[in-house]
Image (cartoon, rainbow, N blue to C red; front, side, top):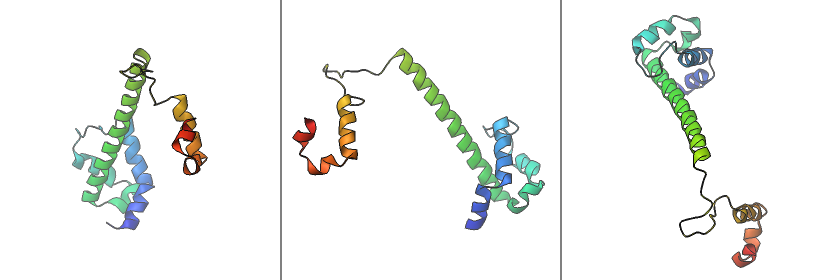
Length: 129
C-alpha cells in the first residue's frame, strides 16, 4: 500500500460511504458483523474500485470502527462528567482549606503575564504582586 493510496483513502467517497454505514448502524460498530461480509457489500461498489485490496480494507474498516467507538465513548464521558459536575461541583478549596490554584484569579493573571512575556523580565515576587 502506497502513501499516495493512503492519502487518497483519507478523503475518498469510499471512506465516507463506509463511515456513514457505520454511523447509521448498517454495519455494527462492535464488529459483530463478519468483516468478510462487510467487504462483500462494499468491494463491488464503484467508489471502492481503487481500494479493493482485502487486507487493506479490513484494516481500514477496523480503524474506522475504533475511531467511531472512541468518539462515541468520548462524547459519553463528557456528558457524564458534565452531569456529575452539576451534582458535585469542583471544590473551591483544597483539603487544607486554601483556595485552589486551578481556575483562580491568580492563575488567570499569571497566564496573562506569561502571554505578555512578563515572566521573562520580571522576578517571581514581582509577578506575585
